[in-house]
Length: 229
Image (cartoon, rainbow, N blue to C red; front, side):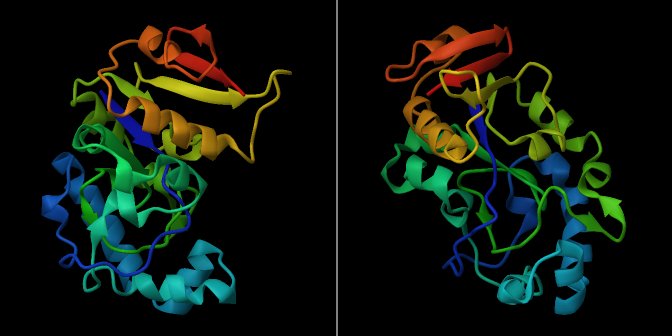
């Protein structure tokens, strides 16, 4: 099983790992795409990066970090990403098995596994670099890399990141309230809780997910679940 989490805009600064080594990352078939995107992003000056990323002056320090992609420290991806989902996941208390079964989508790296060592960066799935969308830059490579894994995949990425590399047979999860309305504010929180609960298990079917204690699901079809909260 492989659970793919969405990335977060917020990330932890710093790290005590070595500088980025793209060749060491999981899903090596993505290396050429990664190199190309890192090269473009890294070579923007700060003002160019802020314009491309469409971020305000208050986030200038994050744009500055992009100039250090190849020289800054790294940390495990699961610690790099922060925010509501990752607070609910609480990576520091997860088992080794859970870490083995978690991955994260990324506009910069495509998809990485929990232990992959990555630097701080700022790049969103909806960003254009040199007028090229992230979807066009990734093409079919993420889809092909994930399908080659031959795992039962639970795709918890948001829509933007799913479009960068959809997986035909992956199970997706939508969060709604009892009235059938999409939950937006707490969507990430509930997905983080779900990932935490199932990451240490041997999930092989959509029925296994539906049987998870403490959660209520309805099956939309054989590949999509609605979590009712």
